[in-house]
Length: 89
Image 1 (cartoon, rainbow, N blue to C red):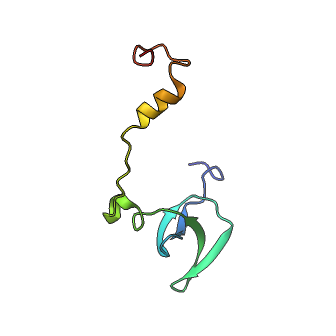
Image 2 (tube, one colour):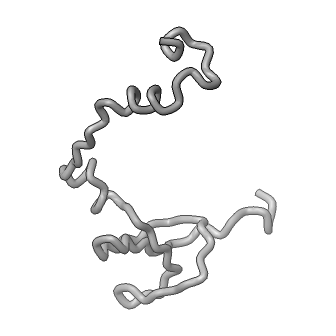
Image 3 (cartoon, one colour):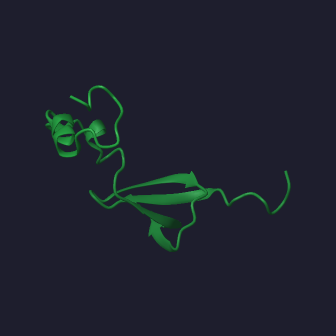
């Protein structure tokens, strides 16, 4: 391998700010902040969603009512810019 062309692959601390969950993994992501975790300093990456807070993994699914969205869209925009037979009805 050539020297100087590969990114710095190191341990990084990811912090899920939605539920204060932290985990360490290896990454090449560039960061500006550092944090001390369990006696060791790591580059810090703040994230909004992780497996600890995502509804799919936590089992707390939100059921979104999507019925009628397509009809509402068709009523609003009609056949504008569409050449399908459905839009012409």
